[in-house]
Length: 129
Image (cartoon, rainbow, N blue to C red):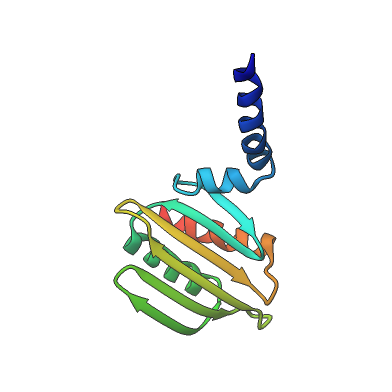
């Protein structure tokens, strides 16, 4: 019958897209606890209000001897430019996603550093609880 062939034809590209990894990030982008590393940026959606995440980030920065070079703030977004003790540049962006969800993007160095980014995210999450 033509219907099963048509279904297979339509479902195959969707399945390939989801299995490639990109679809997983897109479909899971709004869920709390979602973390993805793309093109040098660690992107996470945290279960916490915007101000709570900003305060947890401020504590993580001061507790880890990270130097704050600049900070741009608006009602729904904070962008930090930071430096590690080894003088690596950190760009950290916090954006309100909803009342109880907050997006965090971390990039360390010019090309990103996934282990350090995940470690810094862990420092923020620990102070959020």
